[in-house]
Image (tube, rainbow, N blue to C red; front, top):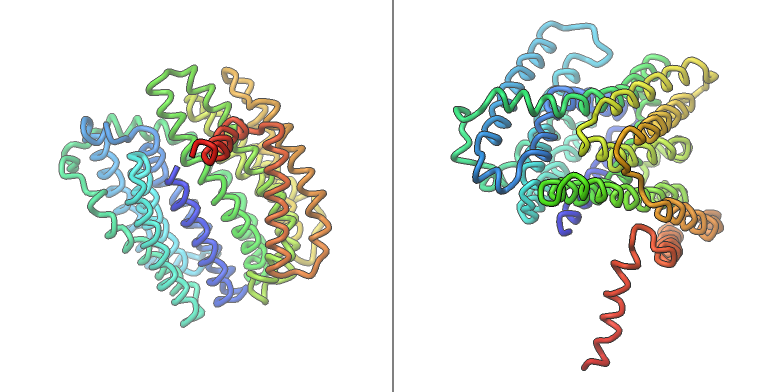
Length: 478
């Protein structure tokens, strides 16, 4: 459970860095920065992410000791792909291709994709062995360096290029902190096996294709928006979306990092039936966490904007954020809930089908929605596409052996969230500020927690109740 703390810390510190970079770069330069990052994310997912997925699924402390060829195959594959990506980055810079991004930004995007992939693969290897302390040290080092170099570069030079260089160096440099946990003397390249690499790629490919299709949606929207309205509108829209994704991502991934590993462990030790039952419980737990989190983001939005959002982004930030709350919910439920059911069952074609549905829905929304003076049409398109993908994927759960969450978990979470919204809505009309937001958060947690406990959402009563009773009995025993 302690793994959740550094995971949440990493996500929240990334969120702080993103806001500060936006503040120092301003809307137009931040638009260039975030468009380059969108390219980096797509390249990272397409080229490297199958290695991270393989590390999460097929690597463990036992495998480290008994099957060094797994780690050797992962390392050799990454080295080969990184060398190829560096060559591509140099060619992009040297050939002066006509791209939506400048050649410098395009080449830097490839560099960022390599270092981010290296960090994500390294943390996956550490998490798979449940080495909480090493993971925590890695997260702290990364964010200290990111704050110093990425934010520092944005502050001193007001340049997207410099900020991206700082990001690249900070991510690569932090790996020195955990080099003792990452270096494996018995996992030299000579032990790598092509058959294993093919197996890892076959497992990850459907997930990667689906992920790239989803990531292509904001990339396409931002590219079109930059051509129609300019980079300032790209920056305004992107800050709202990226901030929301980081918030729900911090919450959802902190839960998923534990629950999915538990499901994988259950499959190895107790069999497929027990793993399916665990996934069903996981789905209920993720829904019970994500639903109030997204609703709570909407409740605190005025105060959040006043307290944390750079002044040049205020107004459009709240507008776009509110329009994209359905996209945030859909993103979290797919990535940290429904996807895991198909991953565990090794039936991954539905992920691609759902992603294609989302891409089609986005294209139709952009074509059919009326044009607007700002980026409103693209915000609507993002929500329509993501929710279309979620509905399509949830419908295909019927293709699996029963993995549905308990009706009590879903209905109970919806009811508790509804009560939370009703009780918190009057506070939304108060003067935005720190006190208002604290009261909103406290009220939301208490109200949702009380209702969730009363109806035993995600088994919370059976988990918390005995501990409360044990504490109440302690004075009597003394």
